[in-house]
Length: 236
Image (cartoon, rainbow, N blue to C red; front, side):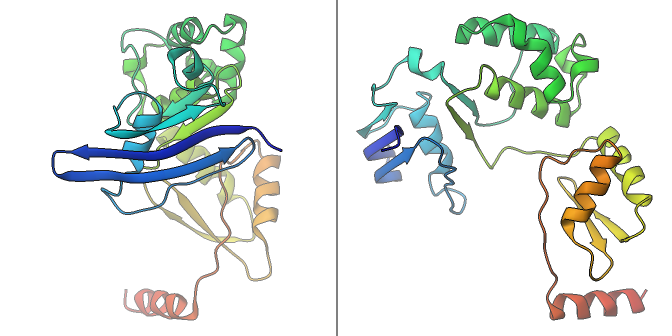
């Protein structure tokens, strides 16, 4: 039987007369990818904050790795709850040295982690000089440092594509003949492919150009969406 990484029993949190959590029961096993879905105010962030010890529960309990709660257990957990928070005047390398000290992890992995999240060439620059996307990368590097057993990521955390990354991706995509157009949004980019071509082919083409995507979704537009897009184009 798989190890239970996190067990929650009857967890309740009240803010005055507002009940943010009500008798939550949950068991998450090692190897599971588990998501909390719900509208704003449904208690997702409150749940994560509570099991990380940042918020005190009104009642109920939780246990990590079958060992209860405690600071020593949180060393085995990587988490990003809100906006990245580091020492602004310190470099990425120095900030990860602090993380290593807190987690009791070897400092020898700092360079490897920063290379993994694409900050190797900016590791000695102050955190305050980073773009939002770079700050997010450092937060991810901190969360996965020492191969954390459990990683908690809050979907409310704002993520955007760096201007540098966006330019590199646009340049790479522009040279792929089966990409007919590219739509941009702050946190993602959508490539429209020639009929009959697949997302896996796009991924392979980008890898060949030295571009590795952190996330790739395949989506087909409905006939209604396509019709509205055609009308919009013809009306311009």
